[in-house]
Amino acid sequence: MGALANINEQLSNEVHNLLAYVERLRKELAGTILEEENKTPFESMSSTLDAIATSTLEASETILGASEEIANLSDSLREKLEDEEAIALCDQIAAKSMESMEACSFQDLTGQRVSKVIRSLQFVEERVDAMVALCGHDTIRQLSEEAAAEIPEPEDVQMHGPQAAGDAISQAEIDALFD
Image (tube, rainbow, N blue to C red; front, side):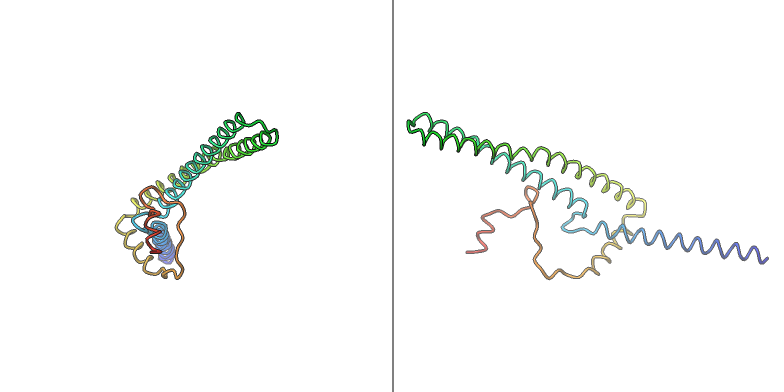
């Protein structure tokens, strides 16, 4: 009977450890899906990175467009000039414009890398969603709310980087704060 009692105790300990592990997994999952404004951190990260990539692309396109226009204006001005020094200045303007356009080529590489990170975050998000479904969405939501209640309120103003279209406040709204 002693051997059977020992096996039962070991089995009981293993089941207890397994249950404790599952509960810890649930709490960790709850911590990873704390929602802020109806978005999980993964959704927030991927949408923030997507907004950064979009903003970078838009800025690069604006810079490229302006640089091309400067080069064209410089060419037009050069045609009307006879002074060699003025023509040389137009050449320098065109050269600097070209440097600006070349410097914008970083955007393509940056965009590719950010897209790869976004896909990785979305993959992790899908795996977390699958684990949440496995552990029970209601249980995870309740644990998530409990974990959120334990997080102290930040004392500093949070700065948010580039926002997804529709999420950001407009420049007019910012200006209105100062009126």
